[in-house]
Length: 128
Image 1 (cartoon, rainbow, N blue to C red):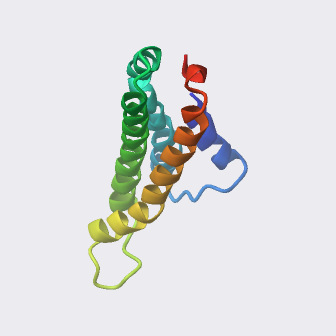
Image 2 (image 1 turned 180 degrees about the horizontal axis):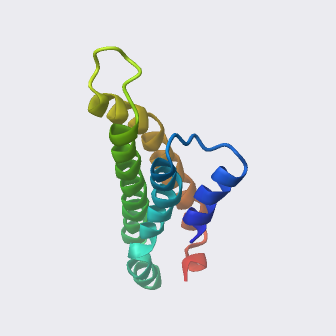
C-alpha cells in the first residue's frame, strides 16, 4: 500500500512523467506497488532473527529487496518498451529501456539493501 501511495503521490505533486493514462498507471501505481513483494521473506527473516542466524536473515533481507526492485525494474522496462522510443538514433528501444531503467534501479537496489542492512543489523529484534 505504501508503494502504491508513493506512486500516486508523485502523480499528485506533478513530478510524474505521463504520456498516456495506461503508461502513468503502469509506471507509477503498478511499479511502486510491486515493491510490496519485498515482504515475501518477512516470516523467514523473523525466524532467522529468533534463531540468531545473522547471515541468514541478512541474506533474506537482500533477497527481499532484490525481488521488490527486480519486479519494479521489470514493470518500468515493459512500460519503456511499450510507450517510449529510444533517445539514441538506431538503438533498439528494448536496449534503451534496459540501460535506462538499469541505470537507476541497480543503484536503488544497492542503496536500499545497504540502508536496510545497516538499520537492522545492529537491532535485529526490531524486525520482530
